[in-house]
Image (cartoon, rainbow, N blue to C red; front, side, top):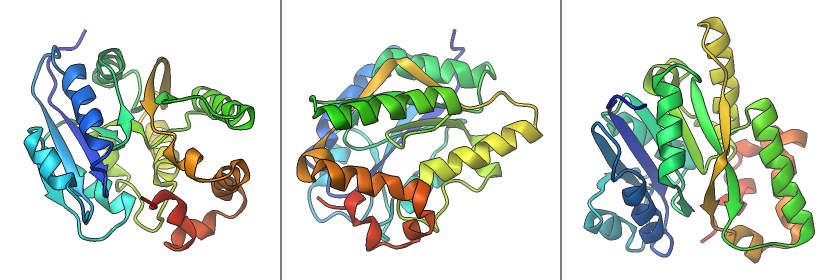
Length: 241
């Protein structure tokens, strides 16, 4: 049971006026009955739409990050946060109370140094992408692979490993997970855990915009050509709006 630790929920957002309202509504519902003090920070990653205004109207604290890069936006939110636990939620992702509560409990009780969540898309896709998603969720449970849509981590571990790597324009959560595993082993902490009983619901907008092969190709780069993640141009798949 939670004892009331202070936590910060950080939402990096670049031109997210369409999806951000639902995300913030879900966050508000998820934390409504939680003990302790919490805050919601939306990082306006140089948006040109109403992202910042929507966040302010919803009661979130807005932090501005001028360089349009996901890792920098996440780190800017962490730098401004006051919580002992940091929870990163993508701007097109909806979390629920059970997931948030369990993630905070596992971190508070020392059952993991970081916690992720299984993913469910907001509508069904073709069978190839559905099977790819099942494989990704299985890999998360089996090997502690974090999805950027939901990452909860203790501030001590996060700061010790230097936060999200700003050398890459995508896949920053995977590199963070590797560093956290190493840190956990050195400090005798339990490994990363992925909660699959309370999945997040995230937008399938990228899958709707690209062909099945285009989606798979963009993700295979993590395994085959990881150095290309340093290229903003190559990673445009994650920045299109």
